[in-house]
Each structure stands twice: as structure tokens, then as C-alpha cells.
Image 1 (cartoon, rainbow, N blue to C red):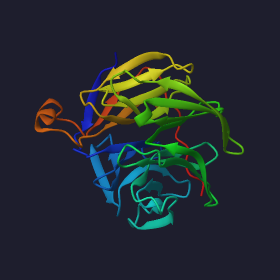
Image 2 (image 1 turned 90 degrees about the horizontal axis):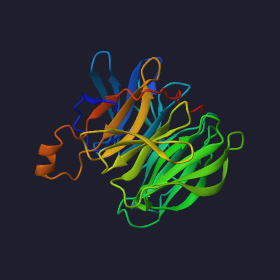
Image 3 (image 1 turned 180 degrees about the vertical axis):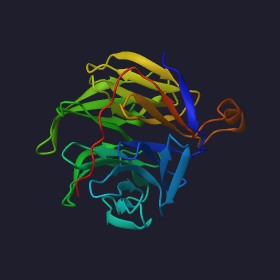
Image 4 (image 1 turned 90 degrees about the vertical axis):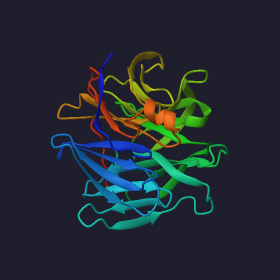
Length: 290
């Protein structure tokens, strides 16, 4: 089993959306409820933070520089030089109880992000595709908590989780058109410890699922079988990303929200960033081309 270590005791409320930048050899990530986009430098241990006006669930780097992100206020750009936020589009202005949560880019440069019901009960969320020409398309309806978005190495499968339904789904994916079809259950975690949260796919096509409430990260084969696990000393593991020069280290974000005093004593590094050596390489993270 791969050993895991805490590299940044961030005390984040909900650290999420780790994205590796190869040019900077740095990890970008969000803290949803202390709304900020952050940049962690493993070489120096320095973490820089850019505050944003509203809860922010996910981010991707842009080919033109800066960041595209999504959260309670919809999609927006962040200028990393000035800290300026440029609003783009709110796909759910009539739903005060939802916000955009998990997301990432596909290899055609489109940014996908899914929403969630903040009450964790109603299927009022959706999965959206935000294109470089700034068109936004609803791709999946009736989601409670959108999570676990990832793409297979051959770009033929899109993975998408609904955390509250304990399920990760797979869709046929067409990279050229951005269309999806043929929804089926890829992983059913009902009855297991923890729920499927954020994810990443490695170069072998295996799906790494962070388990919220599950004290770790689980590796699944392309057919859905569980074939590995990394234990983490925090119950709420939120997402993973491959990083470092060879993309052979796995960065893991965690959450500290809703912990009791007893929980905090048992999980003193909750809300921190962790790293492990999984024994496999990941894939380079695509950038938004708009």
C-alpha cells in the first residue's frame, strides 16, 4: 500500500479540484467555503491564495493564461496577475439552493462542470459543458451532487458521479462533437464506507475515486473492479490529481467541515493536502482553449 503524507496543513473547509501545472511545477486547488483559488509549490512549500467572491467548486487552467472556474456564481475567469474576476455565465440563476461543484476540461479544450443541491436532497443539479465560444449546454439532468468527472485515455468514455446516489456512471463520449450517450453504472458504492467524490484517470485507464467519508482513495479497473486503495488519515477525501515532473505522484485534497471536536482530535490534518506515490503515472490535465 502506498504511504501518504500531509504536505500542506491548510485547514481548508473543503479543499477541492487539484490541478497540476507542469510549466510551474505547482498544484492549483480551491477551498470551496473559504472561497479561494490557491497555488501550492511543492519545491518551496509556499501556498498562495486568490480570494473570490462566492463559493468555488472547481477550476481548470487556460491556454491563454489564468484560470476558468465554476461555483455558486456560475462560470468565471480569474486573472492570476491582477486577481480580477470576470463573470461568464450562470446556468442556474433561478435555483438558489444549487451551485456548480466538480469539473474539468476535456482534450478538446471544453470545460465541464456539474452542479449540486446544497441541501443534499433534491435532484436539482445538472452537468454542463462550457465551450470555448462561451456556449453552455446542459448535458445531464436530475443530479443531486455532481462529482467524479473524468475521461478515459482514449477519449471514448466520460465518467460522472452522483455522490448522494453512491454511484459513478460511464457514458460513451465523442471528443469531436462533445456528445455523450449510453449511460450505465460504472461503480456502485452502496453499502461501502464513503461516497464517490472527485476523481482522476491514470495512463492505464484506471479510475481513482476519492471517497468522502471513506478515509481514502480507491483505484478501479476500466471494468469497474476495485484493484487498489490508498488510506488517508482524514475521513473526507474530496479529489485527486497526478503531478510532479513525471506525473507519478498522487495529490489528494480533503475537507474539515462538519467535524466535531472529537473528530478534529482524531483527524488533526483534516482540510490538508496529501501526496502518495501510487506506482502508476497519470495523464496531463487539458486546458480551456477559450
